Image 1 (cartoon, rainbow, N blue to C red):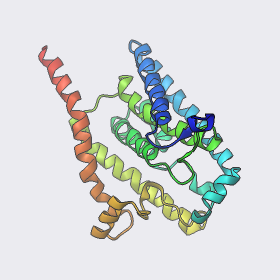
Image 2: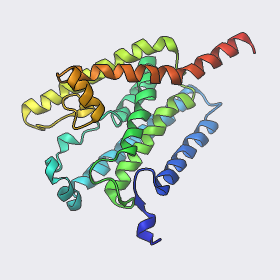
Image 3: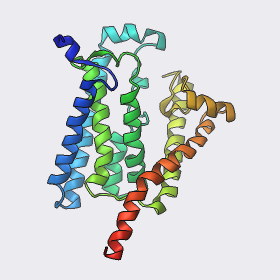
Length: 259
């Protein structure tokens, strides 16, 4: 194996899992260190991590704008457009929402970030976009892409592992409403960018077009209208959130019963 082969990053190759393991270890160590700290300290650490990730995201996009190779690879998709690189995708919007959620102690927003942030980041890691799969991790665009998504993954989980929020069944209806409202706002931003001509293909949250996603294509055949075709996603998100919440509810009931 050459040095170039060692640093080649593809979804689910040894390097992918090795780096993923390092970030998970970071989360575990941080959670142990902060276990007996106050919520104020835990919040400060998580907010700082998100701010640093957001700064890194900005640097990553700056270097991406200068990446001649990426411009060639992405030419068919319209090339680089700053209005298309805003932190408004399903995963990286959490860099903004997590600090707001934990500072405001908004349980529905924390629930959104915990359930949706890691899920969105994991999807992006498992299915890297054009120009981000099969290249050296040492490239600025690869470091930026994978580093950002790994961080968002553990930051979303940290809301719970730090003890700032514990999922509850009773919170889930409000969480679904929060998901709906956030998606509606993002859809409005997409429409504004398209209408203004700043980014005629704006499609954050896939709220305007399916872009070939086979599941969303099915939903669009059911409901052939932008934004509205995303509504069946609730049928996937609901059991996913119920399944993850179940162990927390069982632990809470066990603790309450004194067993």
